[in-house]
Length: 113
Image (cartoon, rainbow, N blue to C red):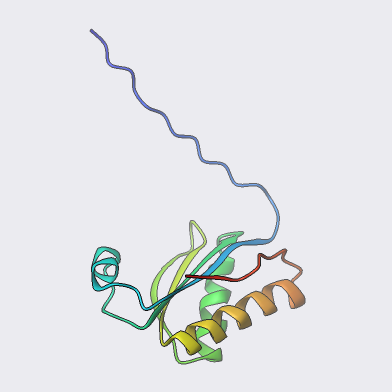
């Protein structure tokens, strides 16, 4: 008997886009642990295409507010920021503002949970 292999195809659409800008306020300790983060007041999540723009986003975020980079992947465009709720919120706003208004990216409404 042969087993069927599951195949996943991942595609990126060319363009400049921030697809997700989300703030998680007061995450539970378990969530932080699962993400490999120290306990924090807030987590900010960004997903950016082209993925190299995550480097720009990380630079802007860390200069805009007192946040730390929890995770960054320049190959997938994922960026996770940690800090206080107000600082993470400010960093997310500044990143989306720069990418959308200065670099011509399309951007989402910033969400919060």
